[in-house]
Image 1 (tube, helix red, strand yellow):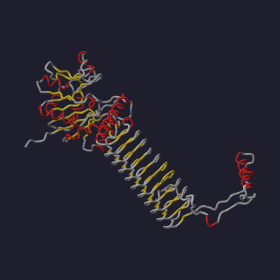
Image 2 (cartoon, helix red, strand yellow):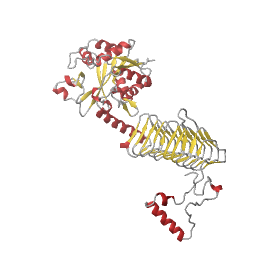
Image 3 (cartoon, rainbow, N blue to C red):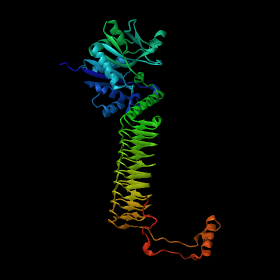
Image 4 (tube, rainbow, N blue to C red):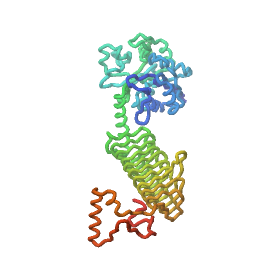
Length: 509
């Protein structure tokens, strides 16, 4: 039975990336859910390498910390002085002296590289028994890139960096993608023979190919099917270009699985997000992190979801959510803000200008508008009136509020935690509730209304308000209606104070 190939992956991630003009190492710049380095490691992962070595240099501690998060099994190796790609690979192999078989070397700034392309390169290399194989691409504009130089028979002769190339070589459009497969033994031997006799005074890894050709060793060229995969970036403009290309690739892939993306140019979906069949993504929408959008859900326009789960047939409109859960058939927005641990159950509603944090909104419950819900549990079919505040913070600790099943909370209410409103209870509008309201009871803290007749005429004489009041009083008198004399007030039955009116002052829909 054939033995599996031994493989080592070396990722070159030591460069400063001066043209990025950033305190962040180039390979740590983000691109739709992963860093540049993260994308490269993901492309190499299906090789199932025995070991992965990442050469770090500029911002080494930051890169090491990132590797701990995304690839804890990878071995970071420090290149204290950036003396060239050949030097980087040499110190990487010194850190893993047991490495044998195939060594795959990948630049750390090629985020569009596909796993299938890496696998095809390695398969061609191992299948042909080559000493070295380079991934090449035919590009429209080769400026700034190393050229593949072939002999009359089409075999690889050498790889030439642009600054060292002749005018004829610079006219070539077949370029070196910076991705290679080597036989470990022959690579080690060639690395020991590299010189710094070039424009930059560095050890070029590409010179290994010339040395191997001179020694009569078999070398190969594997051409990528799509040159876009081989694109790297040197500045923020190129990074933005790669981001657009990846956006288009991701959006096309989701549309081909049965997702409707109404405006692909303004829809940005991280490679770590998931969208299920028949979901509709409207314009100006971002699905970031581990976000999941369920089947037949409608998200957008103008929505950002970060690490958020949206259930089947739910709707999220012009809203922002982080670490939230939106249940099946639930409705969010417009202009809602779901903070971490906001959990909306099936067919619940969080409406306009509502903020929810660390709270459960039960099945069919509604928080329609203008409210803050923090550290709360809201029971099924409860209704939270407009401008309700769940007062959860005493300046030191957070406290929890519980609203029972089918409870009604009137508009402009403050629920001062810790407090519980029982199932089926009502809270009158304008109340500040600091004590529990039993099931089926009415909680009310409003003071009786007091009207001071004639106040405007005395205190605001000559204003448009005074004139309007005078006209209204005159019209009322001529119509035979009750007119209060100065100093008197017309009041309703004292028993109605605080009682919900037919006009619905308890809660809003």
